[in-house]
Image (cartoon, rainbow, N blue to C red; front, side, top):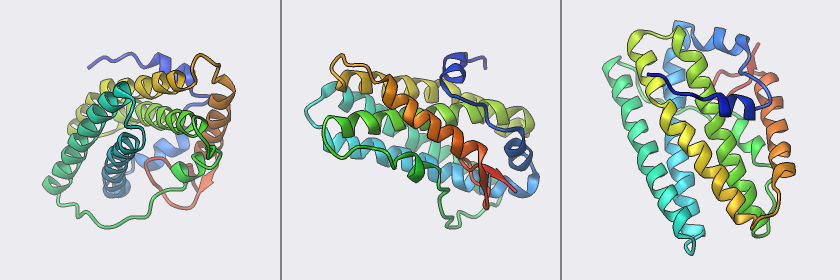
Length: 204
């Protein structure tokens, strides 16, 4: 499957480091890769549902987030099916610091809160898409095909979040806020982490 993600690659301030790929592609880390991937899909669905409950007066957001939540739950089902097939138990695993650290600058008043939350959503989806594409060539045929199949929906989720963020800004530029969160993303993916996760930094 050929999906053009050049828009996402140019949007992000950095590529996933080769050192992260080296860890992620190691067979010993495959169970954690899939477990954390499942957790990320579940969390993404939950985030979309949360936005649907918070911003009930925006039909565009309700429709986009409803579709996104359904797709993320479908991806979750696909990941756990692969895990079950391979005999990988769905053991509890703590999340990486990536998402919580990325969200720290989110403002607490509206509509700034909505704008920042949607920007964060776009960056997480964009980074996920970039990592799927970069990691896929190093995985076995089944996982490679699966990860590449996710690119189209992840790229659309990225665009949906960014479009909604601009809409909530009411015509005002959000470039400065995007830059704030992109710089945090860059710092998090390039810095050292103690545990390997799908969104972790470089594990030493």
